[in-house]
Image 1 (spheres, chains in turn blue, orange):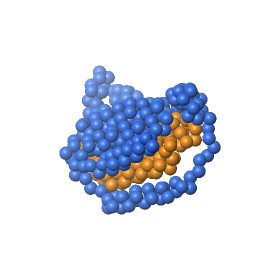
Image 2 (cartoon, rainbow over the protein chains, first blue to last red):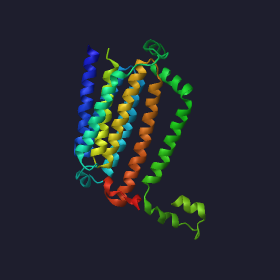
Image 3 (tube, one colour):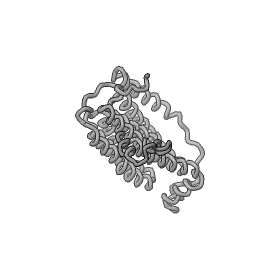
Image 4 (tube, each protein chain N blue to C red):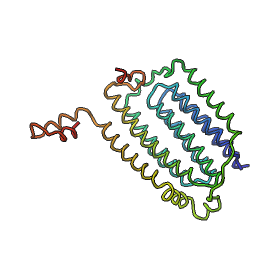
Amino acid sequence: MFSQLFFGYCALMIIVSGLLAISLRNPVHCVLMVLVLFFHMAGLYLTLNAEFLVAVQIIVYAGAILVLYLFVLFLVNLREELHLTAFVPNAWLGRIIAVGLAVGLIATIPAFTLGEKGVWTVKAIAEATHTKALGQEMYTDCLLPFEIAGLILLVALIGGLVLARRDEGGGECGASDDPEPHGDHKEVCR
Amino acid sequence: MIPLSWYMALAVILFCIGVCGFLTRRNVIVMFLSIELMLNGVNLNLVALSHFLDSVRGQAFTLFIITVAAAEAAIGLGIAIALYRSRRSVHVDTINHLQG
């Protein structure tokens, strides 16, 4: 009974804060609403016995990604962003598409049947601790996706560095002593 | 005990809220936030299914999705800043340089 009440509270807060996040005019308020939503998602993960993901959700999503959004919001000019019109020709078209998608997907949920069960029952996870279970899964069966995830993070790091640097950096690059910088030096400067 | 269909319905609703925000908003940053909402809907589905299927593979996938979301936020916001520097505006329908 308590878990159902907790689920209801989290679901209600997630839906309300999600709707507010896409409808408020000020983007900073949107980001703060998404912060509330992420905390309640962490609460839902608690009801699903995923303690490590709760920590990751709060630390990485709420702590790192949303702070990145807030930094960018404070860097760009807020006043120019307050004038908003629809992305699709009519805003109601987008809402109708979203509601139709929701109705269609929810209508297919009763047809869902569970597949065969795995080995990590709640009891087995509780014996081995959740972090160990997740680590064993990730470093044995999902080792290649794990390496690819690391590669994606490296690409994001390099891409963020390249994208966020100023364009007028050519001045300091050209100020070197060499009058004719050779090819790869120029490439680096760009 | 909470039935699986509740989690799936909530995930669908969250995903569709994200779709609605992505389609109707014009601000690039709010569109990225809508993508985060969609990714969270998928994450909730994966974690719920991994709990009900007695497997932790869905949770490993959730970790990978969080990684991709972080990378996407870094790259996308970097692009937003670069565009803002050159155009002084982050509205998508003013970004049409690739149309030729």
